[in-house]
Amino acid sequence: MDAQVSKTVPVGNDDAANKPSREQALAAVRTLIAWSGDNPDREGLKDTPRRVVDAYSEWFEGYDADPAKELSRTFEDVQGYDDMVLLRDIEVESHCEHHMAPFLGKAYVAYMPTEKVVGISKIARVVEIFSKRLQTQETLTQEIASALEDNLSPAGVAVLIDAEHQCMTTRGVHHRHVSTITTRFTGAFKTDPALVERFLKLARG
Image (cartoon, rainbow, N blue to C red):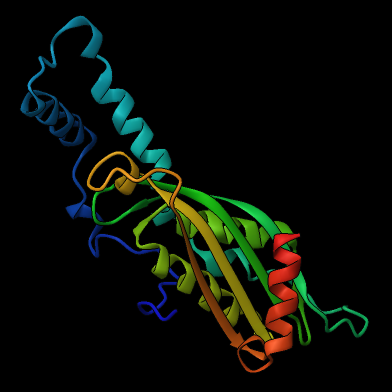
């Protein structure tokens, strides 16, 4: 499934000076509480703006991280290994750009090394960085694949994400337990159906 062009560097405000202050963010949360019909000054809500802003700092910390930096430390002594490297069940905790509602699931990422490999924790970290930004699941899938392509020059990359979207379960159509699956295949994975089939079997265990 094709998606938007990858963003393998931090994205956000072009000018850091344009970023609202913490005080402005706190005021915005207070405004939303009041708009929803409650009193932001009542006892149970007094600290809510602070908690929300702190949570947003954690949920969207991916804007301050660079996937390319995570993938920059590679190991060239692979002793001829050129088969699939696959990570299964990487936790995905993200927020869609349409409603800022969470979507939660798992990512399955594989690549075929050529002359270098990267520490497996770095791949999980790349998934985490892109997940902690606002985007669609399709874009997230594309971004992960492109980051590996751009920085590792592998023979091929495969990415599968399986997630449930809260914007579909808690609002709108209110359909629970609907899973969305997106995939992205490049290089050998795109041209060899047997390799894709093997990836899918291994991903699903």
